[in-house]
Picture 1 (cartoon, rainbow, N blue to C red):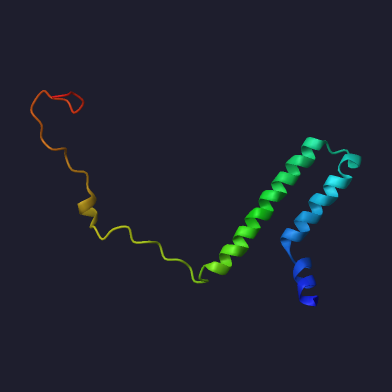
Picture 2 (cartoon, one colour; picture 1 turned 30 degrees about the vertical axis):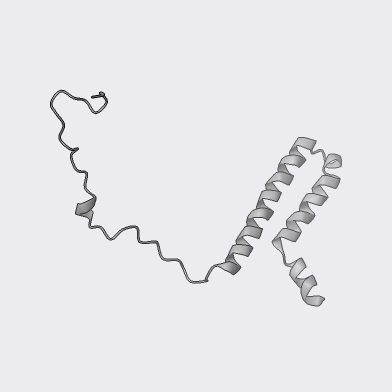
Length: 97
């Protein structure tokens, strides 16, 4: 029980939620408009979602830095732009034959 409580009190998501609840309850008396409270709540909600994704993905992925994927074993000279195949003179690539 003590571990869960200490985890909850050290959670960024928990404190962001507490902040939004306080703003929702005390915002109008502090002079904040409903629109401002809604914008703040949406921003904090996006933060909470991002933090949850970060926490969840950090548990699934290995802790070592990822190596960039190898796209191809081609040499740079193989990737050079080649001229188009020859076509009869006077024909555009856009004309029908």
